[in-house]
Image 1: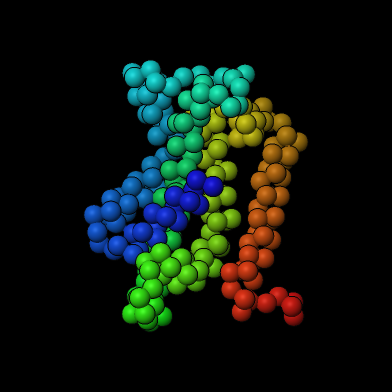
Image 2: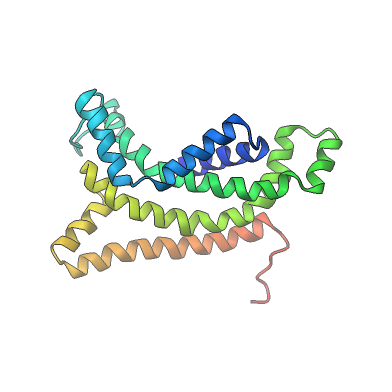
Length: 211
């Protein structure tokens, strides 16, 4: 959710304010977040904020209540590290797709008619750009999240699917490795199905009736 909201917002704003200071800053942050290794980034943040500044716990405690300040403190760094790369990727894609429609004829016509910037952004830029953007929400983001979760959960000691699969690989537990892999495959299949359905909602011209 954070990835979609922040990634799309940053990308669309950068497209509508091309070559501005915000656009340059967002481009730098996007390339930084996309290129930096998550496991190294997580270790550096743990050393800075956990060891030197003592702002977050170094060891993850699974017994902490879910809705508590202590749980929020220990999840800040893992969530930040995990979403950095995905937000950067989606921001770059959304910026590139939105740029095709920012200077389109129908967008200029809407501006000439006095349409508000919000209406132009949501109705004339985001709506047509949503179809190609939806193709990466499942494939690229799911792959990035699954691959990153292995590293992030191991670095921060979070007992999750990634760490379970990692330990299964270390212990050569083939059935457990297959089971954890199957979960990712199942999510990918369901996600691609929902993605194909979303095409018809975003663009009524797409029809699967003859297939």
